[in-house]
Length: 310
Image 1 (tube, rainbow, N blue to C red):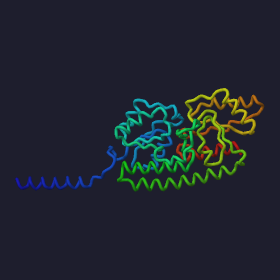
Image 2 (cartoon, rainbow, N blue to C red):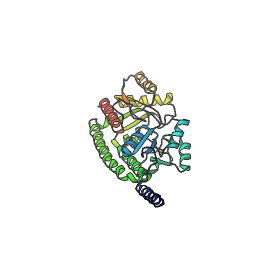
Image 3 (tube, helix red, strand yellow):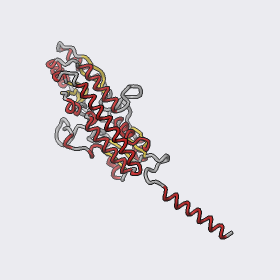
Image 4 (cartoon, helix red, strand yellow):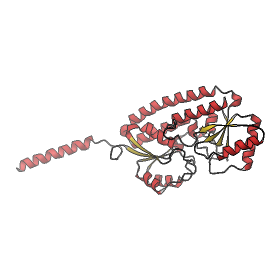
């Protein structure tokens, strides 16, 4: 009996060693997926695409939410602390959440800040100048390609076992982004250069303007934290009348009242300008909108812009 017990114990020990040797390192979650929390709808979409089946992604901000004004709740902080990885834009986009990200980083939590991986020479200055930059990088598809590379690299570091999958997903997504960039440029060519003027609720589209040859004017500044004054409305109304601009645009994450006030100010000066439609600025569209992903959103935006201006 003693020899049988010893033999059985040896077999059990051998099985334990084999199982230990076969265990794959990587994310420690119930379903063996990385638990990722992303701040904006754009970053949640990007994380899902790059992560694929190896990540479970939660987004803090839903469609139509303004990230400039968003304040993290206690539940948000708990969600981020329990995650394996947190992804945020940086460049002061999530302006009310800076201390939360600093605290997570200081505690050794895996945090992906898109800002830190970008080529700083490609960033546009905030309206106040200095070292502060415009955060709306996703409106230049080439910069969003850089964001995709950053997410793929960081997920690979957090979960090296699935690095090849993240790299494959990245490669496929970059091809889709190239096709999207080509589509945008094709549509832009439908509008004469002199008519390529984009007037919106706030200065979210400067990267778009630089990348695709549009003059961009926003009623509010880069951040929606500041209100547009009467003088701002009057000055922009004068610009619209002088340039005979056909259409101006509301934004999905900004109340339409400011653009409606601008339209009324233009009319008071003897010129009629149409509201050309709603653009998605600081978030993607909601379910059923036809703009649920980043690629669908930028295509929807360019279609809206071109149809109103050409």
